[in-house]
Every structure is written in C-alpha cells, then in structure tokens.
Length: 269
Image (tube, rainbow, N blue to C red; front, top):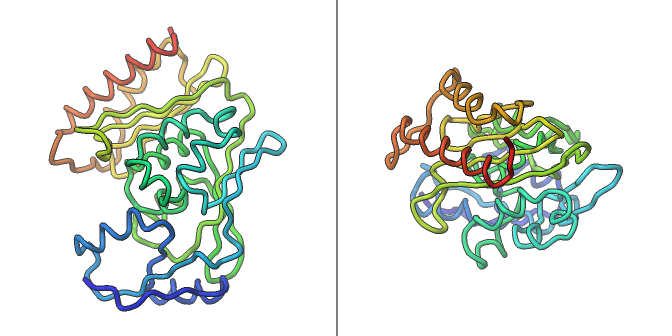
C-alpha cells in the first residue's frame, strides 16, 4: 500500500470531509505509519495531518472532580502532568509502558485510543476508569459516549468517520488505581494487561489481551477479586483474541498471576 498524499486541512469541516472520503487521520503517527509500512491498508490512501485543527487541544485539567484530557496530549505530557500524577496513577503507569521516550514524545492520546488495538495501554486503563469521550463526525455535532462503546461500535470495526476531541474521567470515589502488564520483552505490546480502580471496598477494572474487545469488570469485593475476575473471564461470551505467542489458557494463567501480584501489592485482602 502507498500514500497518495498528505493533506493538512485548515478546519474541522475540511478534515471531516477528507475522513468521509477514506482518508486516514495522522496525529503522532506512531501506530499508523508502521501499519502502512506493513501494508495493512490495501489501497493507496490520503493521510490527513490534523496538526492545524484549533478544535483539538493538548490541555489536561481537573474541574468539579472531572479530569479532562485533550486528544492531542502526547504520552510524555500525560505521564509528566501533576493532575494525572495526583488523580489517575494508572494512566502514568500505562503511559510509561508505551514504547520509549522518542515514541512517547510523538504518540498522542487520540492516536492510542483510535488505533484499533484492544491491548493498547491507555485504552485498557481508560476503559477501566469508565471514561467518556467527546468526538465530532460529519454532522458537525459534538457527541459524548463511553470509550468502551466507541471502541466496540466504531473503532474495532474500522469505522473511523469521526475525530476524537477529548476524554473525561469522573474522579469521585476513586481511592487508588494501578496498571500492570506482561509482555515478551520491554516495549513490546502486552500479551495481557490489567488496569484496576479502587472505590472504597470495591474493585472495577479492565483486562486487555483476552478478547477482541477490552474486557471490563465492575464492583467486585476486594476479597473476591482474583476468583471473580477469573470466573467472569472464563464465562465471557466474547470472541477470543488470536495471539501467536500465547494460547487463551496461557493468557488466563498470566492474568491470574498479575491479579495475585496486584492483590499483594495493594493489600486488597
């Protein structure tokens, strides 16, 4: 597959028109460009450089217990931001596992979430935190849905007829959070990842690497976390994800190991 040309729209109308005609959005390009080199896109395409769109921002802010993160925020900006460090430690831990410094300096939140990879670090962490996202499509109306819904209904199906604007997390009642993963080697995409949110005596979270979608679980008693998550994962009616390096049973055993380490580290029992 080849790149026909790189187009830099001056406004959102122009960008959405290009998207509706099959163009591919490029922000940091850290996920998209390797895919193009591997010829994962069949035909010649236009790349849409969205760096000039004033509607996109790199602002991280907290107001009224809502943490808001602009789609253009780079991973480096995210993991170094004091609001993130204070309120959403799991995003720092997830971001730190994403590539090396050079990649993190270019890769953006929007690119990571819209990549389409169900094991993407920040996707798993943000779904665990019940994140909502704002996006705009060709109707020029700003819409707000859960990140999980957007991934399952659009991103995972390759429907990218929208531009992501921001992500929001409600911080109320979150007492602690963490992100862990297991990969074959440093900077590799995780085989299994686990993000958890503590809310008083209950645990919610998300697992990446088992199924075609990130697997979310909610409001489990701390003392039952390992048993209940493993039971839910085994019973889940979701298409299993293919992985040439680990069978589904092997990935379940990795998940159980990560859960046990999480319990020990956070003294959940």
